[in-house]
Length: 163
Ligand code: OFO
Image (cartoon, rainbow, N blue to C red; front, side, top):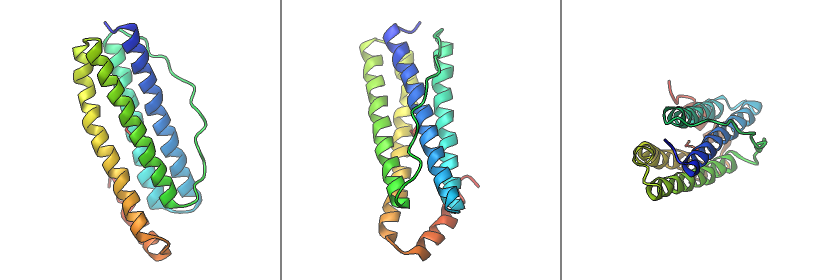
């Protein structure tokens, strides 16, 4: 059985992961609007992963006998000044999510909740990968700078994600 504190914190993480989906979907639609199909496909794949994360939390809460309460989601940003600006926001967002996961781990420890602690281990590793993947794209965009030729080539590369 989950403690009330743990249940509320896990429900809050469902909200965080759903907002990640919302934000990355919004970025995908921004790229779609500019006809950068590769950037859009990359972000759609990222958004789909986020809904997968939210569902992992949902399933865990249900398995532990808790009640999932779906949240209202904040309206995400809809436009970015550049490809780099969008990915820099994604990096900041992943750093925020990492901090939230770390807080959950601390809470699981404080509540002596071993199943939650074990469950959250997957997310601790996943956040290393999440920060690395958005960080890698942001770093490459920094190197590309204002070269539109390179951006078009990179669009084709990013479109291969998940193929
Ligand atoms: Fe769910 O890892 Fe990104 O936000």
